[in-house]
Each structure stands twice: as C-alpha cells, then as structure tokens.
Amino acid sequence: MRGEAEEGATTIMTDLDTLARELLAGSTRALARGLTWVESGGERAEALVARLYPRTGRAHVVGLTGAPGSGKSTLARALARGARARGRTVGVLAVDPSSPFSGGAILGDRIRMNDLALDPGVFIRSMATRGALGGLCRAAADGVDLLDAAGRDLILVETVGVGQDEVDVMRLAHTVVVVSVPGLGDDVQALKAGLLEIADLHVVNKADREGADRTLGELRSMLTLLPPAESPAGPDGAPAVEPWVPPVLPASAAREEGIEALMDALDGHMAYLKTSGELDRRWRRMVGARVLKIAQELVARRLAHPAAADADVDRVARRELSPHACARLLLTRLGERTSHV
Amino acid sequence: MSSIRVLIAKVGLDGHDRGAKIVARCLRDAGMDVVYTGLHRTPEEVVTAAVQEDVDVLGISLLSGAHMTLIPRVVELMQAAGAGDMLLVVGGVIPDEDVPALRALGAADVLLQDTPPDAIVARVRELVAARQPR
Ligand SMILES: Nc1nc2c(ncn2[C@@H]2O[C@H](COP(=O)(O)OP(=O)(O)O)[C@@H](O)[C@H]2O)c(=O)[nH]1
Ligand SMILES: [Mg+2]
Image (tube, rainbow over all chains, first blue to last red; front, top):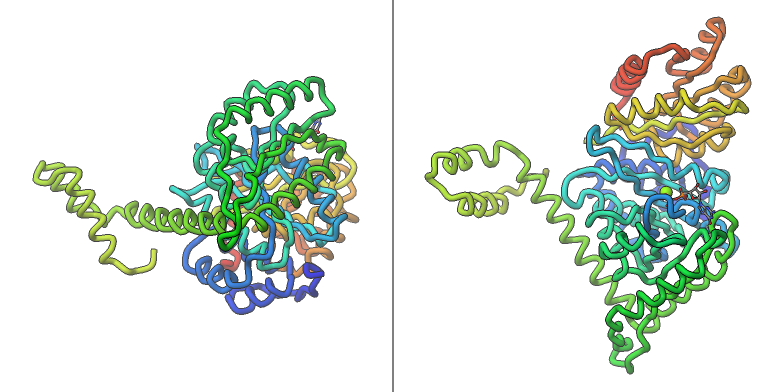
C-alpha cells in the first residue's frame, strides 16, 4: 500500500521534481505540501498539477454536502473507516467557509475524525473557501488531483451546500451524496438551492433520532416530483440503460449504522457510471466545467489588476466612452497580454 | 496570497479549551486559517494532523502541567515526520523556570496564559515572516 513511504527526516520541499516524485511515491508530507501549493495557486500550483494530471483517474471521488451540522464530517469518518475495512485508502478534503470579514477561517471538521489520524491509509486536509470567482473550485479540483495521483482510492470532498461555488465543487465528484437530517425544515431550503438536482444519493443521517422514517418518506416523494432522468445511451451505441434513480438511505454516522449499505450504494453508483457509459460523459462535463472555472479565475484576476483599467475608466468617467464599450476594450486587451498572473 | 495556517491543539488530560478557542478566534479574525482539533489529543494525533494540514505553526496548549513530558514527545514526532520547518508554539500554564527548557527543545516560542491575544497574533506573524518561505 502506498502512503507509508519513508519520509526524509529533514526534507524541506521547494522544488517541483522532488515534490512530485515523493508525492507519487506515497509520502504524506509531500502530499501535504503539494496541497499547500495548490491552495495558494499561481505558477507552481499549475506546474505541479500539470506534472501529476496524467497520473490521475484511478480514484472514486465522492462529494458530501448538506446543511451545517447535518453530520457530513461524522459521515466522512464513518465512510473512511468503512473503506479502510474494504482495503481501500482514503483522502478527505474538508472545505469550510471562511469569515467574510477577516478572510480567516476556523476549520473544525477534523474534530470528528481525530481517531483516523493514526491510520496512514487515511489523509485528511481542511481547506478554507476563499478567493475570487471560482478560486475554491480551482483549488478543490487541484487538491482532488493530488490525492488521486498519490494513490488514494476513495476521495471524500465535504462542503456545506450553500452558495453556487460550493454546488460547483460538488460537480467535481463522480458521486454526490446529499446529507439531510430528520425533520426537514432548513434542509428543504438547501435542497431547493440546486442540491436536489445534483444528488446521486441521499442520506438521512441521525436516523437514531425521532422522525427519520417520516423524513425518508418525504424525501422519496419529493424525488418522484423531479422530471425523470433520461435513459443514457450505452457505451459505443449499445442499447440504452435504465437511468439511475438516486437511493434514499437512512444512516447514523455517529453510531456507524447504515454505513455498509451506503458503501454498497456508492460502489453501485460507480458500477452504474461505468456500465452505462455515463462515466465518460460525466468526466467530459466535469473537465469542461473545470477549464471554464480556471479561465474565469484567470480573467477575474487580470481584471482585478487596477493598472489595466485606469486610463479607460477615466474616459468612462468623462463620458467619452460607454461602460459597455470600455468593458469590451478591457477584454480585448486581456487577450493581448500573455504574461503570467 | 496564501494565508498563514495554524493548528491549535489541546494535548493532555485537562478539560478546558476556552483559552485555546479564544486564541483560535483571534488568529481567525487576523485572517489566518486555524485548524482546531478539540480536547484530549495525543502527541501522535496532533503531529499527524499538523503534517497533513501542512500548517506554518503548530500551537499546543497545555494546562495540565505535563508539558515536560508531552512537548519532548511532540518535538520527537515532528522530527521523525520531517516537519522540521514547522514552528512549534507552546501556550498555557507553564512555570517560568520551564520556559528555557522548552525553547531548548525546539519551541519557537512559549506564550504564557496571560499573553494578550494581540500579542499572540503579532508573534505568530513575526515568527512566520522570519522563517524560510515555502
Ligand atoms: N444523534 C446523532 N448525531 C450525529 C450523527 N452524526 C453526527 N451527529 C452529530 O451532529 C453534530 C454535527 O456533526 P458534524 O459531522 O460536525 O456535521 P457537519 O457540520 O455536517 O460536518 C455533531 O455533534 C455530531 O456528533 C448521528 O448519526 N446521530
Ligand atoms: Mg463538517
């Protein structure tokens, strides 16, 4: 198993070659440093992802989303333990919102996973949601690539399901698990915000609590109101396959109940993706969306550069140029500048 | 563009994390990313978490008086994990006479319980700024 390679006692990784080599060899220290690189973005992050990208594609990426407190981190711990019992290595990427005021964040998801720390087969990393347009998505996607290249079989990405950016993060996953709890209420709001459409699997967590059966029923009937999914064509023109119907499963993450069934459902979804040919189509959509996000972030960063706009904006202020014409002018200029930002 | 990452951990048996949480919030309010791991952590758990999170600063808070056995273990584990460039800051209730020993062990600083939050923020920034960029 990878993930247990000897670590150099005093290695301080600053060069790409060493970092990439050690990461691929399973060094957790290198993986951790690589994640720091991609979190801060920029040239070295791009270079690292470029180096590792050809080595990705083995992992099953599972997104866990739902309201704060619904038990996503606890569920991530339970799933990680379940996966370990099946002989798989695990990477967890826990994405927490940062304070809109200070830009800082308190990342507390690990509290629920402390007892996994001593298993080298589990690697947990917290990431703060910050940065301009798409920054989170870019960093999370890069992070998933690193975990994948490092040989993690199952990658769990946890985000609070609020805001477009976090819904977009879920689009990085092969399988999206939406977590709710007995007594819908707030969750209905969360589900309305686009989560219902992206769920491949629903978990009603805290099923040890009163009202779980009712919530399961409500959720199942809500799902029947969705337009039926199209039957995907099979691979290479094979006949159409039955569409995937998102299962609604009860679980108690805290008591580790319902986890085996959930693991089976995750495997079942991956098997479906493969046999239906949907895996390739989904992958194509995933990378397409990712490329767009990266491009948006690059454009946003260049536009944020004040000097780029000064003179033109002065002209708009003097009413010599319309705001629309100025905006188009800025975009034309962007294409002319090839420098790295 | 990246912000300072800090892991705040409580090791040992004492059951109070009020102080550690206040420090965590101050660092957060100063724009840092603070990983918080909760009470009663072992040195092994803390160092593994700090390595995985690749924090700039590992802040360990102790009130239990067990610092002279727990901190050497933390330092040993950090070295074994190749985390030599991580800054170790010890905080909490530490008798004055133990401070030089903790520094000699490799603690970048020892901040006693009465250190004002602003001073902690300033010290963390100073320590990170003085270290090699990563
Ligand atoms: N009763 C019950 N409580 C749970 C369960 N899973 C998680 N919790 C509790 O719910 C709270 C929030 O859990 P957490 O995993 O941090 O939720 P997150 O914010 O969605 O990551 C914690 O106090 C957990 O102990 C469960 O299955 N049953
Ligand atoms: Mg959580």
